[in-house]
Image 1 (spheres, rainbow, N blue to C red):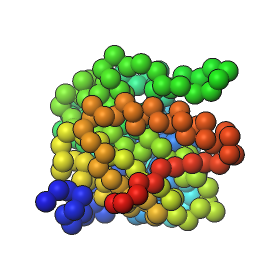
Image 2: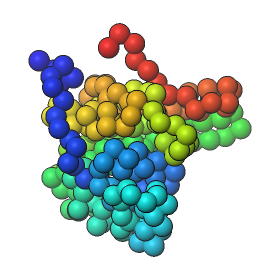
Image 3: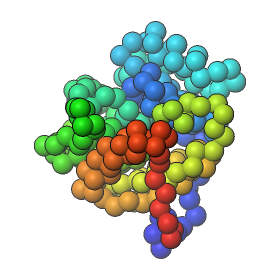
Length: 226
């Protein structure tokens, strides 16, 4: 029986660290996980910015801000939501802090020009594979690439209607991340293959940006038949 068919693991007690949590994507994920009852540690290069981001989530939510190394060390599961151009250097600096942890990479290597967004080539194949190459002591999982920051941060949106594709080599770890995704109201976490398939998942974000611009929306992905 596969992880997706089995009873999902209980992840309700896990704390979640978000590296780059002061950006819209990281802060949006932090907000939704805090609303779901998780303790969230927002990480940033600046402790002051991290504290401000945590406070901006609102009263009654279990969230605090710390410098990235503290968030990496103290959280049970760590999400990487930093800009692509600082991705590798940050992970190299936190290699020891992230050892032994599930690290969820949601970074999309994209470029932008007059024609719109496009996928950038990555030497290792994808941002997730780059993370795995750097963090040899961690279990890297790819997920949360297509979740709109605008939707995550919108207080009028009670349920985020989309599926999160979860990719990785370790099925126990992907099962945990699938269950975490489902903690966000309206979201399903679906197994999407091994890390070698992460490139096209990351690159699909460029297509969604084109959809959003054309139709003035915040598009997500739904998988039928599952």
